[in-house]
Length: 203
Image (spheres, rainbow, N blue to C red):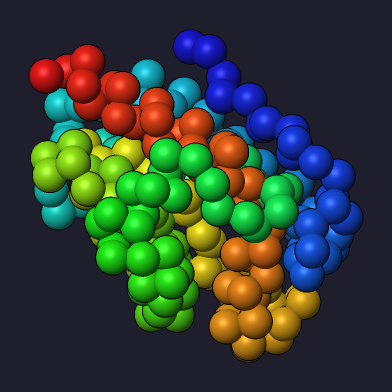
């Protein structure tokens, strides 16, 4: 079974505005890498698990399958999170037009995204839902909770304390403002167009 690789940052640790190099070093090099390594470890363990003892109350199979989604989503969301930063924070492209269409205005979306980030215990994710053809801000209190099946994550923001505590202490609001200043909208737009094209291909 092929191992999932730890992907390098697309920018230097100290390249972001308001999010320090130490935060990025711990977040990417240790925490994110830990999710990747645990996903590989879980997938390897699943190849030899005793499936005859699978049980919904407790079994090795249940434990591995439950944590598989936590580790996998931890890997995937972090790769998207790091990938959508490193920009100038200036919205543009088709996704900008779609945000204004679905939320009434960019300001309304930004207000909702930040408020969602304030109430989420783990993640706020701008996602494209092909079932209604709209963009939504979804929250998750954990990586494997709160997502909507079939929706494509376009712009995720990690709201766990490890994302901002070194830089801002408990001031999550200031961190969210810094995150917005670092969004790479060309990358967000690329992900949005890819999501729309995949949804159209499946119709």
